[in-house]
Image (cartoon, rainbow, N blue to C red):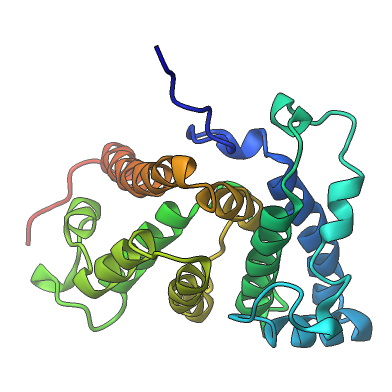
Length: 248
């Protein structure tokens, strides 16, 4: 009797609380850069500009990026590392996952000095769902009586965005995956919405192993649907708090 291999990244709703080694390395590295960039450090500003040039380029292809994507963090995991970190790390896959995650974050953070674009617990599905909600409630969006209720926002899927999200899960190589993620990251940047790049790095690491790819896709889809449930719950809470509205 055979059993399915254990996925190399935590896929539960609270997965971000126990990052794998690659996600933890990405989180530590990005947080340091993020603090310095928001403090307008010239070194950090220059580093992000260099990292952005690596978006869509193979890991280690640009000598100018050596030492900038957080690979060194893999050598010094924290003592409180979760059990997943006890497994040997495939450094080829880890370096590629870090490269994609860190360069995408540098693109995402560009020009955002007022807020962090790497934020814990904002998985890819949640970020896309929040982007849909914002677009549905943006000025000029069609709404009955000039207003959109929280439930109607949840029910109104933005089809172009949904298709972009689905296309991420149909990528057949890391290069194609990085390009499709870049399209979503640019939309998130324009709307000022964050993403958890530590979680994404763990997922990119796992995605490269065919037996784990399905786990990653299901985690993205689950995060997307859980975000919709949160929106519904927030809408019900708001309705109870505000009480019945008077009719015109």
